[in-house]
Length: 313
Image 1 (cartoon, rainbow, N blue to C red):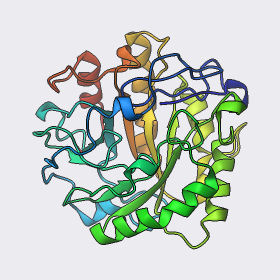
Image 2: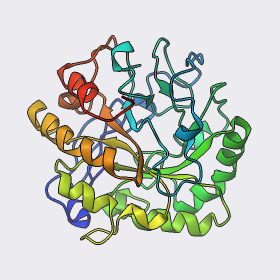
Image 3: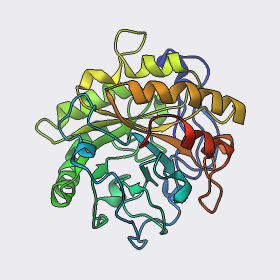
Image 4: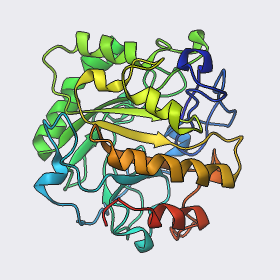
């Protein structure tokens, strides 16, 4: 999770505020203040160097891969979780996948598909799990407090991710972006412009999906963020299936606010053919958004997430 630029986002309050990993940082306008960063080194729960304990899971279907499907309609298990705690068995089968901002899962026992992430340059030499279906790209590289890569640097490093994905037979997901602010803390404030610059610098690179983050607590702004034709540009412009890999209300909202937003957002995300996958943010910087207890069992909000229509039902 990372910063925010509510004015640039054209949304109220927490506009582009994000929250990632364990810990956070001063998110800037409309953001939240925490202590580390979305999936930052403090938030990866010792995942680097951990034993690969990921289990083979449901969702091992050709239709789940969605490689080259610009609509994203082929994805049959959209619902996931962004978390440092391995989800317990109660989340299956309505939740199909999870990630923890690291290339290797720390811990064992979750029945859900684990999707590794190359968080930043520090992970470029990491070994992926033996079964990898999707490889997630850099975490908020437009934020100095996150993986901190210019679009040109990210493009220069991208062939290493391509090689890892190709060796694993996995689909490759773009750097995950959000609005950033203030400008002095960012490699560009607009997530749309960052991706355009990345694709320009990485002409001919393989990128199968686009990843984005969002922490404004209302459905209209989420729609505006993803779709064209509103006050924002929309990520559909890139013609690739969209992964909303971090989203929830920001840290100022109550558990009731989180539930209300979840109940509004999930039906939209399930029905939007351009959204291939989504993952609710469940980590310490936003306690009211947590889906799991420390043992991986669901919180009351987690029970709501499990029970909403769609997912992998």
